[in-house]
Image (cartoon, rainbow, N blue to C red; front, side, top):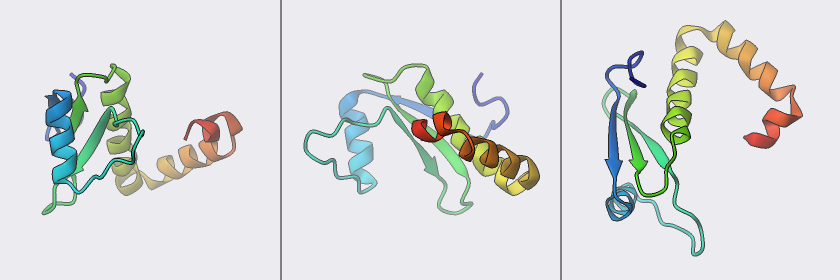
Amino acid sequence: MLNKGFSDVTFDFLSEQEFKNRLSGRGYVPVEGEKLPYAFLEIDAKTKTPSKITINNSIATIEAPIHEMGHIWNMWAAKNAPKVYEAGRKLVESNPVFMDMI
């Protein structure tokens, strides 16, 4: 249901080891003591568009895929609705509570 608006985006729900392997294959080198991400967004190399959200199924909560879809929305809005995107960006930047969250 999450990808209804962006139907070309798929989801991979991986075990912790599978997730580590996928990250490693992308050149990610964790810093000692650093927590693994809950999820990450993959961009198609040819089209330069979001193609897959990969979820660390061992630790992620429902917020992880929603958060990643937010990245897709931002990318879409910046390209297709720049006035809406810019207005939202200004709202976030003007609110210290939001800035602390970023």
